[in-house]
Image (tube, rainbow, N blue to C red; front, side, top):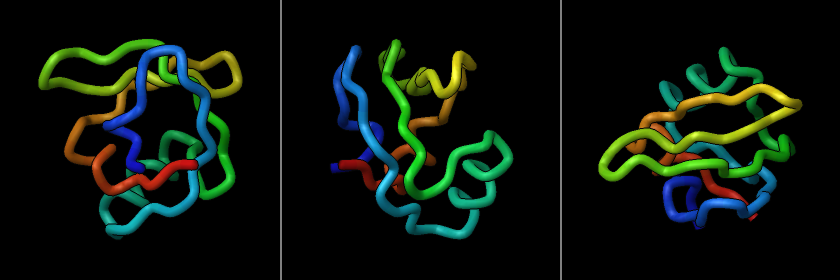
Amino acid sequence: MTLDSINKGQEVTIHKISKLDAKLFAYRLGINEGSKVKCIGKISNGPIIVRKNNQELAIGRNIAKNIEVK
């Protein structure tokens, strides 16, 4: 399952980030493999809003498609 397919309110652990550009973007936001995030919103055809350590982050849908979660 990838980050773009999770539901609002769902908490997941980042398992793998497949593409280098997605990995670099995620690292800039403080997200890496093993990070736990909670989906707090999804904008139709737009970014996925997640919360990590009381910080809300918007991750573009195309980047989120490259982030595998459990």
